[in-house]
Length: 338
Image (cartoon, one colour):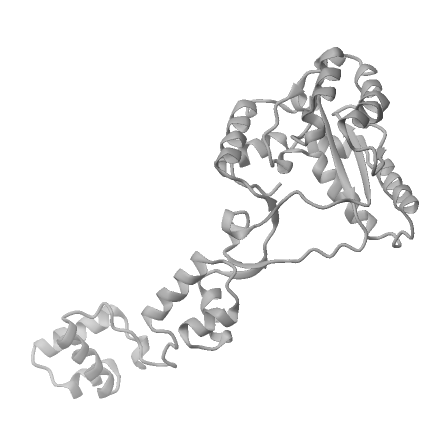
């Protein structure tokens, strides 16, 4: 019988036999074990007074000491963007060894999902919003006019950031790559939908993106008909994010003049707007098309994809709203998977 197969009960019996005066050789014969194994067990008992921490001496010794192990855990937890080289240099072992220990701890090197930056006020507003509407039903959310603008660029190659995280930490604040609003787009479009219909797609020219232009192009051009042709427009509520063009005085005056109610919307919260999922799908589908050679060709391709979107799928997106509210509450206003 090998040493590692001796059970805790057998080890205690060995100690008891020795206390009773039995010789090492006799004890070894009882358990069919080498005398060296019996000696190791009894020596540990004499030094430590117990057998609880006695472990097999088989196999290679660990490459990291307990101190190095603690240093590695602290380093990964405090800075998720450490590279393997930096971590290996920190504890003076190979990158392969570091990767092995991190995998044992449940860490994987993953691409950080891009999410808008959320400060304390953003989180508080998001949490208040989710708590205010957590009791809304699917039918309630169907009466929201979900609107948004989206930019479509060609040849864009965003940098990916890798972080060390565990499986359940994907959307933790230190495991995401915050995105900030910046830059210009090649083509900008506006779209809207409710649980009952989808608006025509609006192309917003590069030189027509001010509030003065937004009202005639979007509000009067499409939103007015989309809103008032509804069977019961008084039940509808307009959703818009906090873009400057939505907050300026001219759009505000137009909405008031036409009696259109607007839903309060927390800043930096695209994960709560289902139309963001629509834009994501449109952009993914465009990747399967040949690369457009002109802006006009790009517009045609965007329009063709928009036309294929069904109201049934849009209603499926709307049905996720109660779950989005729950996710925000669970994250205390932080980022969610949506």
